[in-house]
Structures are given as C-alpha cells and as structure tokens.
Amino acid sequence: MMTLRFSRAAETVALIITAAVVSAPTMAQSPVPDLLGTWSGSGAEGAVFGQLGHQGARDEPAFDDGTITWTLTIDRQDGRGLIGSWSSAAFGEPLAGVLRNDNESVHFADHDTIFIGTILSPTSMELCPLETGASTVATCMILEKQ
Image 1 (cartoon, one colour):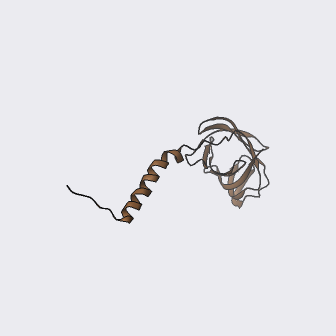
Image 2 (image 1 turned 120 degrees about the vertical axis):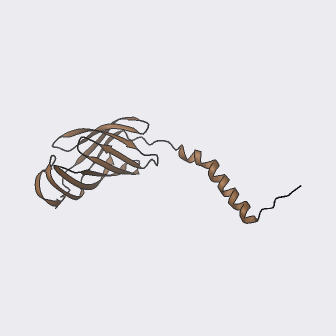
Image 3 (image 1 turned 120 degrees about the horizontal axis):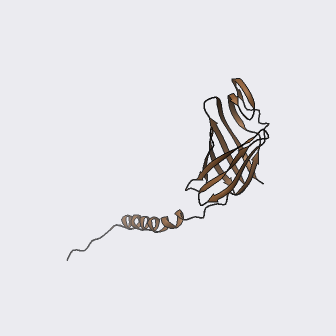
C-alpha cells in the first residue's frame, strides 16, 4: 500500500484553496443595496460641447461650470434592475439601469446618455454621464441621497 506525504507548504495551500472555495458562495450572496429614492448634486467636473439640452449650445469644447443641480430619481428597483429619471431644472428624461454584482458599480442609459456610477456609501454615489453625437459630454459629479 502506498502512502502519500505532503509537505507543510502543500497542506497550507490546500487549506487556503478549500477555504476560498467554501466561502465564495457566501461572499457572492451579499444583499443588494436599496437605491430607491432621489439623489441630487451639482458641481460636475469635466468637459462638454455641442447641442446641450440641459445647458444650451456650445460650439467649442469647454469645461463644465458645475452650476447645474442634477437629480437622479430611482422609482423602481427589482433586484439589480433600476428604473427612474434623470433631470435638471430644464427638463427630465426616463432612464433604465443596472447595479453590477459587486454592489458598487451602477450603469444607466437614457435615449442619448450612458451613465457610469460608483456607490460610495449608502447615501453617496459618483455618477458620470457620457454622450456622443449632437451633444458631447464627459463629466462626473457626486450625488447625495435625499
């Protein structure tokens, strides 16, 4: 009969791998954060140009002046799926979104804008709207849950 012997290092590696495999399903099942509600902020940083619906037209690229107050309203949430609106004082637009599996990254889209966001805390997120075409926008701002 053959007896297998493993070095102490091999036993340690096997133990670490086993622990990681056993705990992985637990880590993947963390609760989905509740994003329902109104998130607002101003002070966008970045650059814009073109036919900007919320800000008027700009022929040349310019830095965003950060004076507009933006509001993201999430009216419905089904797991990671999100439905709501994006607005300024000028007007609002419906949008759809999704929270990624890391529970920190969020993406939204409306008819002309892609939004990439990061949940910073239960009451704060960074949101970066990006547009190409008649309006060109690349900005980011911090939104606070109201």
